[in-house]
Image (tube, rainbow, N blue to C red; front, side):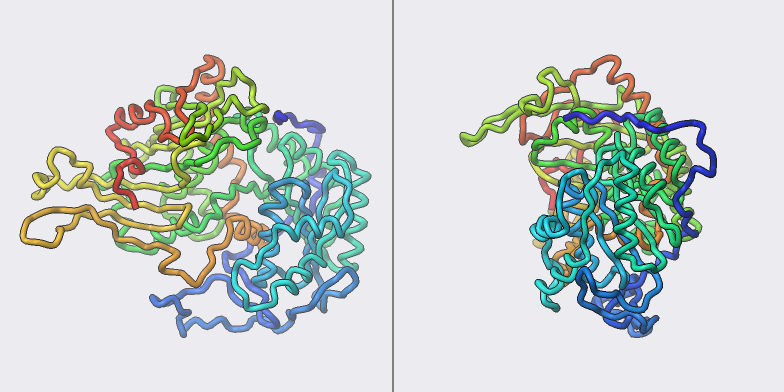
Length: 572
């Protein structure tokens, strides 16, 4: 099934009074608290080199009011005067089952959620509370540790989960949801979070119905919106306009789950808290920056959805571009969400609009290996046989400011490639008058220092340096200074990106969510090229399933005097 970006019930006649959701207050500080027994602990903690908390900064109790309880449908939730109701709209879908409910359980298991919370599923599928719990239970795992009885924690969490069936465009059904929410909230002040795990063509219907019939009258109401945020500048602006008839900007949390990845979160820390990197972070020392995303599988049943968007809209315009802005932005005034997002917008507004000649496209074709046949993109029964939607794209982007003038930022994203990875690669300039250049021969790229942040899999940060091989001769080797997360932090489980982003939305922390002007600036970079691409019906270059992608990507890199770092053969 193909989803089109069409927004109904959007009228220009709405005024400020039509924003019916309760406004939320200014973003809370970037220090969150954890509920553990009767102790509320600080979320962010400074550790010493051995990984233990510094003794000068103990996790002191802030409040003694929270306590652990076992919950079921009829148990009161303590003395707190407020409740949190999280409604997952589209609860029967894959995203909800595989990501959202497990993330909520992980937060509960680790005591990150407030004392009085409930989780509600809403979808068209007819289902009872018990059937929802059975569905959710199949994807829950106590993956963090075994300090508490896993089964008991699961039962406690599932006892807080409820279901309401209804149509997405029915105000009557959302009124029924509101009745159920109020029943479980027990007359306390209520905060409500709606997660829209649904196709974009019904975003506005759901927001309209929820705002009219199911918003909180006594606390805040927030809405998490999943990508895609339109298909181009026009459709994105229309979606934003329609949502803002019912929501304020402060209530809209546009989620890009890649911003919740541990290594992406660490990018700013690496740069702004380490003196050694900041002086190098400019055109004076950096030759190029590469943002690489590859998957070793195809559309896998998502062909109908994917064919309407393609790899550029699905990955480049959001995931990779967001990472680029965090990498390239100037030092923000503070860690406040608006200060960080202001700097990201400045980067986007400084960028040169992407041109078709700086883009290479590809589409994977069927391939047989070891007696196994791997199907091509158009072999997917949900994809038109004559589809020219790209499953691979490489692009060169440029930032026209004093720090980055002339430095190519190369993006590469593709499906059905030889490996699964997501990484940022920073290639530094050659050493002027290198005394050891004869040891490298004519291939100076072998002498290039390279900083790599591997987002997935096996999170790592490593710096490629030149080193003398032990022995009597003068033989140089390229070695890694390596921070492999699973080795350094072997006792710590890296949280899923959805856990971090859900917690931030609950706390009102917006720095990892996308603001509307940021979204407009991002689409302005890509929309003209996408329009030209579709008008001219550019046919992508075919590449075999499981290969390294189309040859055109190498020509594009060579045009800008760049060699792809992930194809060097000496990668970690």
